[in-house]
Length: 194
Image (cartoon, rainbow, N blue to C red; front, side, top):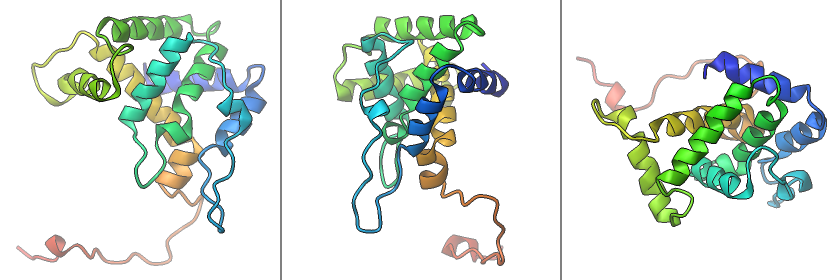
């Protein structure tokens, strides 16, 4: 699946029924705490979200997988960005226009179930994802569910970095602004002249 394919699926989802409500809530998710320290409530549409494309077990596995790939640390992660929700909504909304994407995802979820991801405990799931990712890092390594890892990683990354939590909170995107100055690098290892 190419970036162009992802954009086409997202465009189909934007034109679908319920898109205004879903994307309105999704773009509010992951908002920072107010000045007085309270976190705004999670939009009810996302809190009470019922998956449309995935069954409940596959959706829960997808949520867990996305959170392993982009964990919550000092900045929001896939959980706060509701990446699994985004993927589910986009796949459901574009299923008539791009049935091949749905087939790829169904096959990926079957592969995850076959390697035991769905039934695994949390710590074991992290080990499974690490094993699935080996072909990405090690030449000659293989894994039967590597294609599922790549698909989930690709769409999770797209979902995260188009969300408010990813773009504004994690990347600190400020919009169309410019830098008045370009401060020098202050890393000690970069001050050495060879």
